[in-house]
Length: 361
Image 1 (spheres, one colour):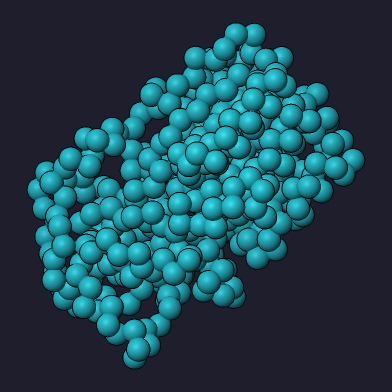
Image 2: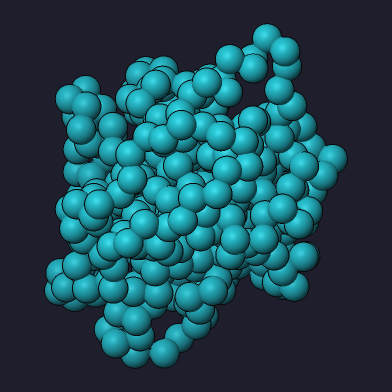
């Protein structure tokens, strides 16, 4: 089978990329406009001993990738010798239920349109588009989304879409995400039979019906045994232990409590129903790890917010995945919260790679 090269857009800290890399894809070009994010991307890859992308880093706006001739030359060169895939999760605040709700005309929302324009013009053999479920579940956003799909269909792609939840993939987090996969008709003569149902994963309804513990009194440094008949590997505490978060490089990266905020110590362990200051339960999974717009997650049994090391664990990153220390806390939490959960990316990419190995010769 020909080599498969992947071009990553809106790469952020690169959780989606890492999943594809570890599933056997060659990440050949990385595009990210934020210099802090791309700097942290390089730092984490150096620490993981992963070689730089073949065609380097495009630290620029995706519009520049669309119009500049040098990027077109790279795509053409790569397509002559390899199978090419585009992957990307355009910024989603304009489609998010808790975001700006400006849709496809918003500052961030328009980037999804530009990503599709790039796909249509460059014609990769396949593509992956990831976004929030608000893109399909909100009426006005869905109209925009259907137009995007129509454009790709009219320009030579078979499409497969699915709303997936990170919990099903072994991530200790309830996080819905929309995935749209496109397969170029120039390579695939018939509609692909790839299915998300064939990816080994749990069933969300079964997982939610397990006897998870409810709220309990918050006690500093308390000890609570893991209850029976739940999925221990989907709990916050399991991943804190697995990643040895107390000794992680980013263990001390958390916002220090102020005297005016000690009131959050009265929030019970497991009380995640409020809009902000949600206290995680050690023996449950986390709500969506979106650390912005006043979304604050509190440690189950410490009188503080969670750390960056703990947020990385909740995103199911390997224990040796680290972020440089010289960035602001807000930047660190933003880049962690923006990412596709690693295990979700890895299992999707592994399923896609297995399918491609059978169908491409």
